[in-house]
Image 1 (cartoon, rainbow, N blue to C red):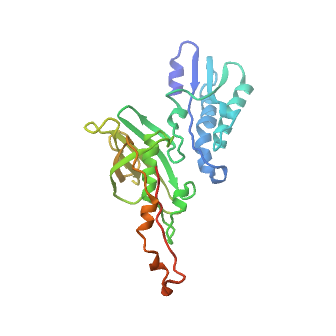
Image 2 (spheres, helix red, strand yellow; image 1 turned 90 degrees about the vertical axis):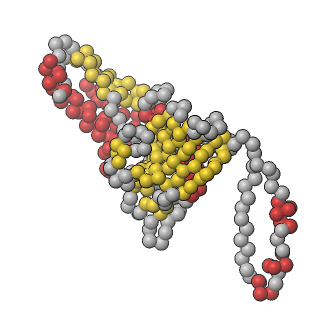
Image 3 (spheres, rainbow, N blue to C red; image 1 turned 180 degrees about the vertical axis):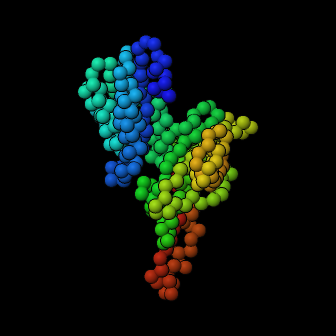
Length: 290
């Protein structure tokens, strides 16, 4: 199609190569396949364009590089390398070829889509006054919340508190500053991942129109086989399963202070001082004080 379009061109052609893929992660966890997915759009894409544009008069050939090739951020060694290739390509070809080392753009672009400060919410897919959707990839190798909640058979799962943390992080755009209030929370299905598996997970927030201002309904989904993501119109490989749902809102009034002396007075210490209780292990629940 590109060759056909060039044949129809009657004057100089301007080309802007803006393709790019991010896959942040520690260097020791990266594989040849994951690095190739990041390198290919910029490296192979540039070489393919050069071949297709051979003998075509160009007014400009602009490569969208990144500041990461100069100051690489943590977890982006492959992305930094891909942009370094664009810089070297432009320098070696000269002429109309130019590389621009872009920084983060406001509201659009890769940086805007990965705006969450929480490491589990890697990509911001939707952010409107009435709906927010974050996405992340989960495997035992990349997520401690899975590797530290693993059964004897090797299957790992996210505990219930993990769903609440993701909902709170999405609600507060990753800052986790301040208090939130959960109501009507249901845990519908476990999110389980085996040792060699990687699964997509999405956190969706929708504003409750009939509830108090600022209240959202959260839903946590994961992808398993081909289906349309609820309320988004996008189709991806996999069936979307809902794991947890409930409502979340800013905490308008802090809970009353807990009187630890009163709680301690409820315990009959003598029960634990009997001879037959010698060596017993005492288990106490933790209380979070606001």
